[in-house]
Length: 260
Ligand SMILES: Nc1ncnc2c1ncn2[C@@H]1O[C@H](COP(=O)(O)OP(=O)(O)OP(=O)(O)O)[C@@H](O)[C@H]1O
Image (cartoon, rainbow, N blue to C red; front, side, top):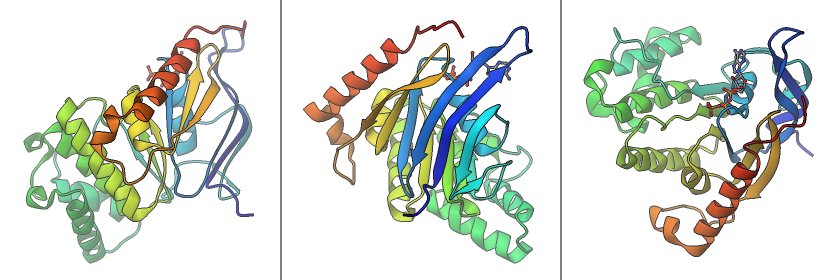
């Protein structure tokens, strides 16, 4: 059997000093298969962003196992693209140049950078705005650039931390459509953090609900809705029933405390 794309086993993370320790992640066991779309949900402070940044290699953990394709994750890598809620674009570069800049760090030549960046700017449907600066783009457009940048070096995994959290409802829906389209065409493994349960159900194959104090996984839901997804599904009884179950798990996990 092939290795899972991502594997966390008995992973623990504490913050703070020895005297004043905070158990941010407790015995996390989680596997993502190749091409799977998994959302992490849970009350504020349950450790979703901590988990995502550990998988991104942006911070360490205290014990446990963290593997991608069977190999340990020891730091950030081009195999994992990251998109945050804040757009993190360089304001003095155009949309196209922001993507090129990331690619030059990946060792491509100038001409390759230009071609690959252009392709990904088109992929997120921003062709007309390639030469615009971030200050000339809307929030949704800036996030499209951030997605183009994350996808441009063809990562195996996309790690997204509330990427649409700052967008208005309509733009958010448009971005969800775009992401599902890209995911269906390019078959990436996605780990997606969101506060929005409707968004989690709409996008995911599986939803992992975390509880707080300490941060741990308290429920997992398989999303049986057909693909491709479309916005009309949101009003169906199956969608609404699953949304209720996920919300109930988040509520149940929002005030746990077992003395850690
Ligand atoms: N650098 C840090 N130092 C100390 N404590 C931290 C640090 N980062 C996060 N924490 C704490 O760890 C816990 C988990 O935080 P984290 O941001 O991962 O949760 P979250 O579920 O992503 O929250 P939110 O939904 O509000 O973004 C919180 O109690 C937070 O205060």
